[in-house]
Image (cartoon, rainbow, N blue to C red; front, side, top):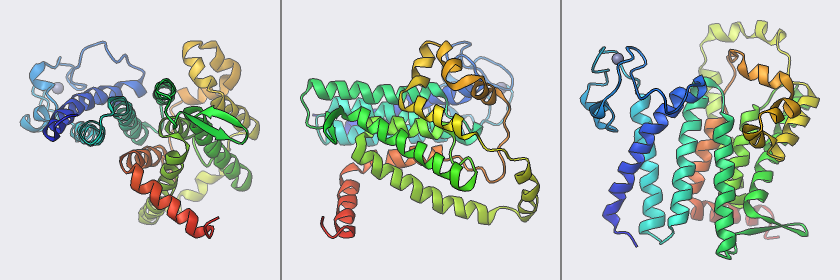
Length: 339
Ligand SMILES: [Zn+2]
């Protein structure tokens, strides 16, 4: 459908989207408007012109400094543009050059863009904004409606005796699985094993990737998270390890009741509805969660945001869907002796 060289076009559109994502990453967690005021240097407030807003090139040719106040610009700006461009190019190549599937290209390009924002916001602020999680769920449900209209065999998933739209099945699987892990950690270790944002993120990933591929992506996330988490704990400076004991005493995990109620709310997408009807937020999740989210919460030294791993696992699974599913199926057959 598209010639291979057009992948370059996909890459450049992706870098422009990445440039916008840099605005999202800076403004969304700070509670600022995404559109007003126009782009400006956060240090000297000088408004940025066309020359300052060309993806990749502005960063590289200005010697990674603000042209007006000479303040250093974070490498993050370049990385976000490069990664988004690369992902757009890859999905372009897969779905537009390799096969004629513009709807799937749009789904995965949008999915990847939201995940890139999630990754960098979670690394910087230890939060996953509700609006981004709602976008993921919306993308999955929207694409599912398209699959149903096209009478695709992927549109419905059989769960026991009921037939669910696949995106709904995937969302319930993702939220249910990580809600379960959070409950497990809370009951067995009296620890907050996962943030609420991770449960909502897994829900969105399940909705877009659908149950089977989502499961593979969760496996990847847990495997990579476990390895890198262990490395991070081992490499931590000794002084921080010695101070650890004092912190533990003040630690008070979330109440079980709250975790049960919130998790059920995420399964029912009450948090998404609350974006449109704000009263729902307080009614279902209570004032505590709202206040906790507003507090300047400082993470403990062992806190490792899991969101980036979930998001990265989802991106790898979306890129390598075919081979990974085959590998997982082979493994399953081998492990169960071909049941
Ligand atoms: Zn400046």
